Amino acid sequence: MKLRGLYAITPEGPGLKEKVRAALEGGIALLQYRRKGEASLDEAREILQLARAHRVPMIVNDDLELALEIGADGVHLGREDGDLAGARRRLGGKLLGASCYDDPGRARAAVRTGVDYLAFGSVFPSPTKPHAVRAPLSLFGNKLGVPLCAIGGITLANAPQVVAAGADMVAVISDLFDAPDIAARAREYARLFA
Image (spheres, helix red, strand yellow):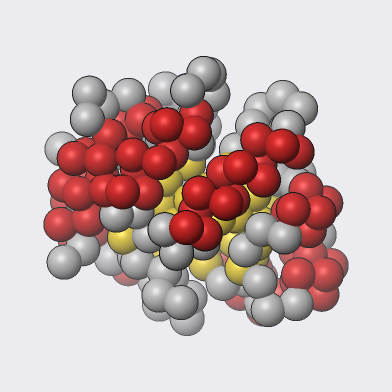
C-alpha cells in the first residue's frame, strides 16, 4: 500500500456519508474516521464499507478498540491516545500512524515501535486546533524511513509548498469537506502528487 496523496479526515456534523463518498470519488489516498465525541459503531462501519468499495484504506483516529472492533485498516494515535508499541502488537500488519507535532525525537521513537507513517503539525494555523504547536516545513526534509504526513491548516493554496518540502501526504478536513464540490477539490489535491 502506497501512502502518498490526500489524507482525508472526516469532519463533524451532518451528511457525513455523502461527503465521504464524494471525497472517495475524487481520489483520496487514505481516510481517517474521526469523531470528537462518542463514535457511533454503525456510522464507523458504514464509512468503512464506503472506503472498501473504493479500495481506500480507512483508519480510526485515537481509538484502537473501535478500529479493532469494526475491522478498520488501522489506527492513528496522538500523544495521549495509548502506547504505540502495544498498539503495534495488537494491530498486527494493519496501519499505525502517530502524531509527532513538531518533535523529531518523538518521530524517531515512533519509527522504532514500527509505525507506518508519521504526522507533523500544525503546519499552518488550523481552524480545527487553533492552539496547536506549529511544525516547521523543514521537518519534512527528514528521512525517517516511513511516509511523512503534514496536517493543520492545509489548503489547496499552501499544499504545494508542503509537498515541495517533502511531505508524502497532506491531511485535510475543512478545505476538502467545506468545498462546494468535494470530489473536484479532492482531484485538485491528487494532482499535486501526480
